[in-house]
Length: 234
Image (tube, rainbow, N blue to C red):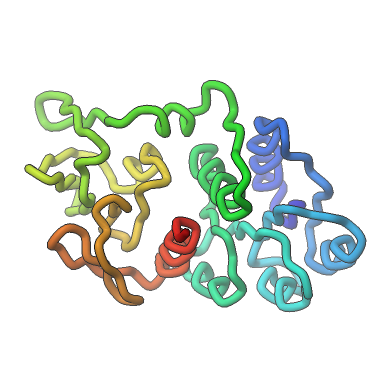
C-alpha cells in the first residue's frame, strides 16, 4: 500500500514497484485517515508511508495501527527519520527515491521475513550484488577496488577518500553519488561517512569502530543504521 499525498512521488513508487513480479499494489491513498480505514480490512505486507500528510501524519497513523506491516517511510526531510525508530520502521527513503535505493529497502523487508527476493532482470542492484569490485575515478585514471577491501568512505569538501585495508584512494565526487553505487553491505552512518559491514567490529549509539578507526554516527542516520544492524543479525 502507498500512502502519499504528492502525485510525482506516487508515480515514482508505482514505477519502481512495477519492476517486481511478486509485488502488487493493494491501494494508493493521499491521506492517513483513508489508509487507516483500508488497513482494517486489507492484508498488506509492505506499507510505503509518507511522514508529512494532511490532518494525520504518518507517525500518527503508525501509532493507531495495532498490527503493522513492514513499513518503509518516504520523506524529503532527514530530520524526521529518527522519529520512526521506536515504531520499528524497516527502512526510510529520502525523496527523490532512486530505483537502486528502493530495491535495497525492499530487499531488507524480504531479508527480515526470511524470504528470497527475486531482483528485476538486469537491474543495477543485481549487478552490484554479483560484482565484488568497483572502479573509482581518480585524478588521472580509474582504479579498481575490491569491495571486500574497502573499510569506509569519508567525504572531504568536494571529494571523497576511500580507505581500504592497504591504502587510501581519492576521487572527485560526492559521497551521495558513490552511495547509490554500493550494495547493501555498506551503510551511511554520517553525512561524511559510509562504512562496510565486513569491517565493522564494534558500535554504540553514538559511534562505530571500523578496523581501528572510530567514526561518529550522525543524528539523522541513527535509525537507518540501527535498522540495518537489526536486519543483519542472526
